[in-house]
Image (tube, rainbow, N blue to C red; front, side):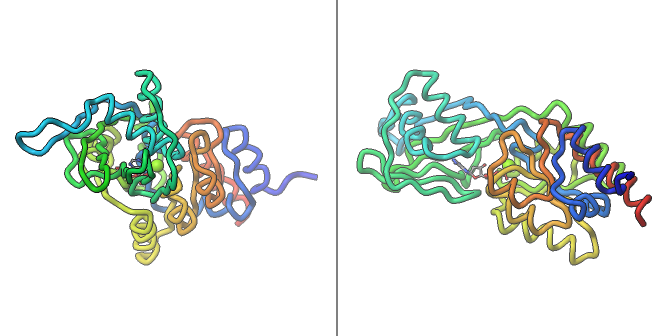
Length: 282
Ligand code: ADP
Ligand code: MG
């Protein structure tokens, strides 16, 4: 027997390195008319590196920790986290042979940061309200006192611009960028990919709201993301695609399709496959 078009499209998507979960999911991918992309891990490689460690102090006083001490403390609090920023901070500390203390009472808050007890002190590593420049900045506090900041940068995916251009061609409008990072870091990526609709400082629920806003305007939104913070938006979108390599389990579960081979251009490719199959079905 010949395979129904949507099923052969799923097989073809597999050859492009995309795991589409069902015929219904395959069908939805071709129906989208708008796209929105996460930044970290989606348009960027999701393997950031620590580029600066900046202890701070109150005016006229010495910093409480030097750069190594600050990095070691942050790494201890981040150690249990799977977030790409956490992995970067831990490997930077390892690279400098710094001691990583066993943290207790760890908690992660998606889109915000982490907190843990390190040597009996409450340490928080997370979003900075006053970021510095185009880099991603996280602040480190101990018992509520700001000890310093860490700067991280993440390389743009090699195919971020072509994938964005292909999605623009498929939908007639450039995709939106939805990120939990700050506006300057988002602008750097938007500029490099030709994106103009940039929404930064978003919490997971804000990404959902951005998707819903499009749906309320009668659009069928494709959302592409990778993190725990993206899972709700992946579920809310007409079609959700998760980047698989560094993707969190929650994101992979919430998505209609998972990019297994680590290429962003696989996303427009699978939309095209679905559209072709839909023309044969409908
Ligand atoms: P994105 O939407 O770009 O994928 P996230 O929503 O995961 O980013 O994170 C948004 C911001 O929250 C980060 O830029 C960072 O400031 C902060 N953050 C999230 N998780 C962590 C963490 N584990 N450690 C430090 N900061 C974090
Ligand atoms: Mg992400």
